[in-house]
Each structure stands twice: as C-alpha cells, then as structure tokens.
Image (tube, rainbow, N blue to C red; front, side):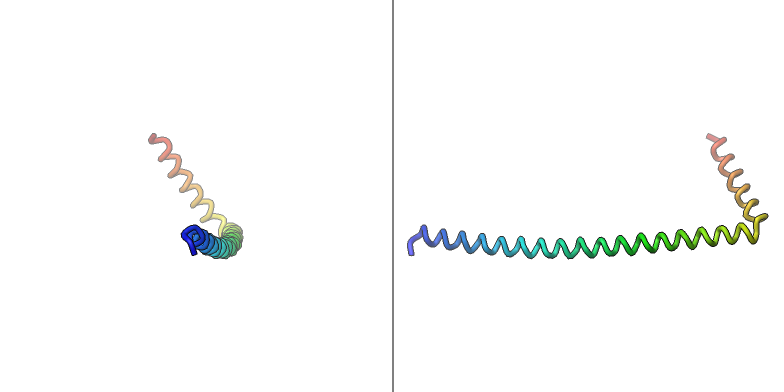
Length: 87
C-alpha cells in the first residue's frame, strides 16, 4: 500500500470516527435538552401551585381577620411613605 492510499484510509477512518462522535454528542444534547424541558415544566407547575396556595391563604386570612390585615397594610404603607419622603 502506498502512502496516498494509507492517507486516504486514515482520512476515511478519522472522518467516520468524527461522525460517530458528532452523532453521540447530538444524542446526548437532545437528551439533556429534553430533561431540562421536563424540569422546567415541573418547576412552573410547582410555582403555579404555590402561588395559588398563597393566594388562597391570603384571601382566607383577609376574610377571617380583616382588622389585623388592614393594620399591617397600613403599617407597611406608612413605612414606605417615610422611606420615600426621606429621599
């Protein structure tokens, strides 16, 4: 086998190996992308559930104890007013 044929054979083998590596990397990337999407969807669902639960708790608190809730809101408003007025 002459040097040209050896070079062609080595080039073909290297090309095949590079294509295999690229295919494997593509497969791994797609798998990771899919898992990331699933994790994102689960996080969005959890955040939505927690937000709904917090909203329900706030409404319940407001219905059952309107005086303390209004007093707390007034206190927070007063504090923010003082902080803004100082600037």
